[in-house]
Length: 257
Ligand code: UDP
Image (cartoon, rainbow, N blue to C red; front, side, top):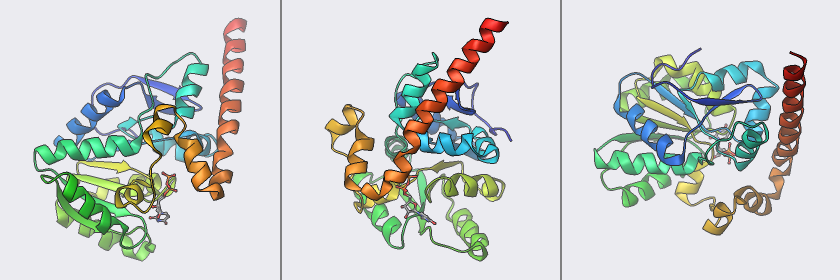
């Protein structure tokens, strides 16, 4: 599997997942190019939990590596890259990238289809987006709770809508697997796997205050707000441990050469 389009990529491999070495501004520029050119591009936004899932599931790793751009959504990924001596410029939050992209699309009347989250959330997110970005067209919405039998109809709805951008917010790894399975049937220009972004846009989940984001403590805020996610956060120490182990093994191998 290969990304279908896009310029040459400069990536950092972390535990088998290729992450683009881009600033948030550069990533946004790439995303705008993708949404304005033909063919279906794909962007994924892995955090340490997603990288760990891919480390333990080679098929999932192949899916992530089939993207046209993978940005470091979690600060843990940025730390991991630094630890192995291949630094990334900064964290590129999938939510910020998606919002920045839609603001740019509003300037040229681009259209977005919002797919995912509980019934009603995508519609509320659409209203908020319309208020914020008057030039943006909301091509359609669909909730993320469906059966396999519903998929052909969902794809038809997306394609008939004429959307340029498809935000797929089904959570990981469901969204990445869905995009990879249906990329060839979609007529959109860009798909983004954007996790809980629709919940935040709709206001059903609050994003961390700016100070937490600036201090790279957004994960801590989310953990305090949703302690039930503790199991998911346990992936972070495992991720750091595996990066450390992989780093040591690669240094040893270099010495032996
Ligand atoms: N979700 C969905 N369909 C499913 C499972 C989850 O649409 O079958 C939605 C869920 O309602 C939520 C999002 O996927 O809006 C996942 O949010 P989460 O914060 O877990 O995503 P993350 O960004 O952490 O992957």
